[in-house]
Image (cartoon, rainbow, N blue to C red; front, side):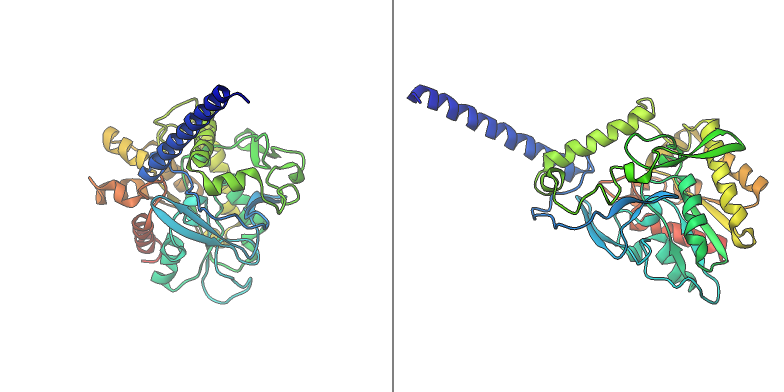
Length: 361
């Protein structure tokens, strides 16, 4: 190879290397600042083991591989999640027990995304009341899945009360999914039929039989690259925004429609029908954007609608939006993780305090 060609090739490689380095540094800055709340690289080769988050149950789809622990690190938190023998992110619980016990249903807010297990509201409630709160939450799910988790799993555990954490955000994102096994209601209220986004759970990209126990490029790149994690997060975020018609200021407490609310109501009615003695409470869980809109507009469409539904159906509704907005006026961000939209330890602490006062006065 002529000397001049080698020099040009070297210059191109150096330029490419510097460009990649700048992109990586820029991605690191965006993640550490919280502007892109993506996973932090561990700089350790991932272990070869079965995946933790899987579509494994033919009734409700997304669940957790039993008896596993995984770490979760971002710029503002470092925690781990552990599953018990039946896949719930909780300590081991016997199916039969004497005395009061509560079943807790919900999504990633209920699971305690980004916080230590003993800091989430269900664990704090257990400490405050002395009553076991069995957490059956699963991240990325919606109210139809809460119902199916309750019907096919959680109801098998002796209990006298049900607590449902409702997030008027992705809890409204029901419907067909191209690659995941997800249940959803089809039809019009109250004449719904249960449908699934794929013919078989084995067709899901998250089914254990397809998610092999081997390293993938995704695993390796995610472990060593800020840029890859940032790009992966942005790609997922764009898909969510496409479903929401590119509304960047989407606030679930305000931007839902009548059909979304009707599906949520129907799922809650199904849980209520199965709850022992119809002892059921629903907690409204706001995101920071909901509190911001509430302070600006001085109204609460979702809270008002759920208050009416609760009165008609018969369950208790505890809305955290007005309580958090009033108590943390001017410092609402204290309730949330600094680099993520989920409740932080203070949000869970406040929710547990309110629930103790309302449910166990």
